[in-house]
Amino acid sequence: MFKFSDRVSSTFLTSLMYLMVLIFIFPIVWLLLSSFKPGSELFTYPLKFLPENPTLDNYEYAWTTMNFVRYFINTTIVTVVTTILTILASASCGFALAKYKYKWLSVFFVCILATTMLPTEVIMGPTFTIIQSLGLYDSLTGLIIPSISTATGIFMFRQFFITVPDDLIESARIDGASEGKIFFRLMLPISKPIIVTLAIFSFQWRWNDYIWPLIVISSPEQYTLQIALRNIIAANSINWPLLLSASVISILPMVVLFFIFQKYIMDSQATSGLKS
Amino acid sequence: MVKDKNKIWALTFVITNIILFLIFFMSPALIGIYYSLTDYSGISANFIGLENYIELFQDSSFYGALFRTLVYAGIGVPFTYCVSLAVSLLLTSNQTKGKSFAKIAFFFPWLISPIVAGVIWRWMFGESFGLVNYVIQNLGFEPIPWSSSGVTAFIVLFFATVWIGTAFNMLLFISALVNIPKTFYDAARIDGANSVQKFWHITLPALRPTSFMVILLSVFNLMKELPLIQALTDGGPGSDTTMLVQYIYETGFNKLDIGYASAASMVLFVLLMTFALIQLRYEKRWRV
Image (cartoon, rainbow over all chains, first blue to last red):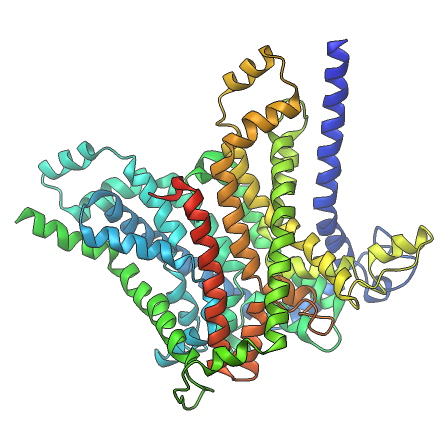
């Protein structure tokens, strides 16, 4: 009797879970299938689930009519460069916050936490003034520099370095290693799991970022993918065949990256120290 | 002597972040306060005291945006919280099968940008071409005006918000759920507790710190959401889904009424801070 009810609830919960999986996955499947339908098929009733005449025309169209290669390169440059700089800046800052005891460092840590309370979205106007007066307006550099600093990254590294025993650093000091050498040769290598986790997060933040390109970029040569997509949507009548295929293309790099680094993201321990 | 040397090293390690903090956080914040007291429109700024704030509190379009932002967060956050928790419970239950695939499926929307998420849901809920209305019509009902009525536009927005927000909360919940000691549940079972009782008296209290975090992060994310709404409804129909951030953006960048927009920014900032401080009072673990 007990066994039976166990099996019933197991079947029920598993079905419930997969019903939710279906709801979560379906919108993406529908986007993907639609992107292979020729323009005429997209709007003809009755709608078919699978494309009747699957075609790559929409993709070719997106790749050739829009300056897609350009947007792709721009987004890649910004994402890769920012991610590398973010890791270096966050790791060194997190290390200092964890291992040196100065009052001004604690004050600065509180300042870093405070930044999460005033997101850029809230102060777009003044941020624009700063960008302009620094001569960063309408340049990829203007996208990279402000995004280097992230409270989440600093916090992740600080939490990690707190768990590293002080003896390890002390004995390196006794061996005559400088603080810089200790950081680069000893601390950075042992923080590899945090580096990978932050790299994935940073990649996703920058690849999908909208608010900074919106403030900083104006000319089409500097567009990132998100801004280019937004421009298709903002048109008077949306070019859906173009928008659907362009959207799929913009997702692809993230999907590839996800499947390579899946275990780092899904490993629950890596995110357990994540707070902001 | 050694101590001083270390001080220089410590400064070297944090200098990048200090400079970035001063330039891209401190300065905009101070400039924002200053702008909010002026009639700055991109050319010259005259000091006008609290006039912007007084005008703001008589401006019905500002009130509208403020009200919609609160409704959006007020409904969207509990909704996201419940779905994230339900998904995480299913993914950590020992009665469900095929969890690794399901976990990837629930996590997938995290990879997708808010702009593309907006596109995806807009495509599904297109009024005259969308799949959802097609199915509704085939079932013999009237098609629903997803994008020409404010209420239904809000409903689609909630779907999209939950869809994209679940993944990250799920990671936080799962890492907390697997850390609840099994012995708690064993003891409860011996005492004859059923699943509902175990959930109320063990799981939920153990998740308290995580719940606070998920709610805090979700409130912030929803209150500052812009790309998802821009791609999905563009604040429409009319201004029925225009939130504060979009209102600030349009006032500041399209109408170039930067002083006025900055005053609205300060109101949003005070809202966010009030909420964060209320949460901090209740959540000691945040203090580090």
